[in-house]
Length: 202
Image 1 (cartoon, rainbow, N blue to C red):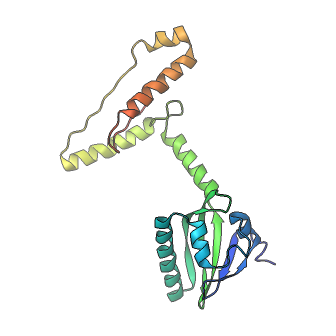
Image 2 (tube, rainbow, N blue to C red; image 1 turned 180 degrees about the horizontal axis):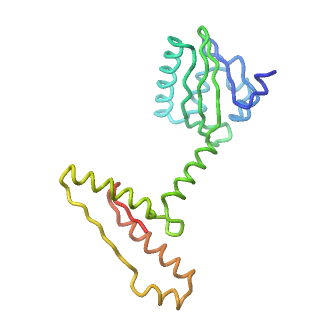
């Protein structure tokens, strides 16, 4: 009863790769009933539909289980991209416990946490109006690029630009039109970048 009511997903798998226990939270996360997901092989195929990623996850999990079997039994939790029966994707921290040739897997949904982290990162480093880097992002990137160019004896180019007569444009057409102008200029500059380390900032 306690395992059924746990606020994290739980699943137990035997030595032949068969599921023999799954709690309610696990079913809520993934949407499969016992008959649909009887074996670990079915799990790999359904939850990780991309073959290359599935192989990577299987190798990582096998290594984690082997380390746990040799050590104290704890499977170190790692984050994985999973897909539920309804097609929704979640980022799950999956870990667990090895006992004999069985294991208990634990599942904690980190999707919301990751979304919030990305939102905080955008708030901290992106300009809200134009969706290009803000001053903080620019300062950090300039410092890093300056050091990189000094080490490699490469030149560094920096272009500073203004929009001509922007105050008059704002006064004549209004601030909403001025904001749209800034967005279009930023998008035009961003579309002209050709290398991953090029940066447009406001």
